[in-house]
Length: 88
Image 1: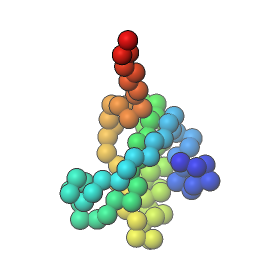
Image 2: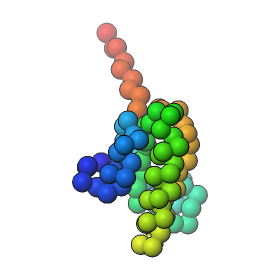
Image 3: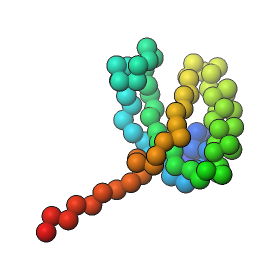
Image 4: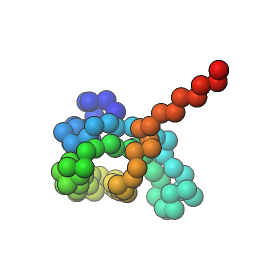
């Protein structure tokens, strides 16, 4: 996510990595609302509380514009893992 993005700036002090993923369909997400952003965030355990506080603040700021932020997890860091196959 570009650093000029305001959401990135809100979270940049507590995240190690940030990965944008394709938004889920309404069927997959189970929501009646359209998902416009789907991101995975990798952070240290000791940063979890700070991240949650930053997330809650961002959520309150965006509510007035009609956007809803939702978070799930913590999850295993599988979005940040890579697998290399040796086909030799």
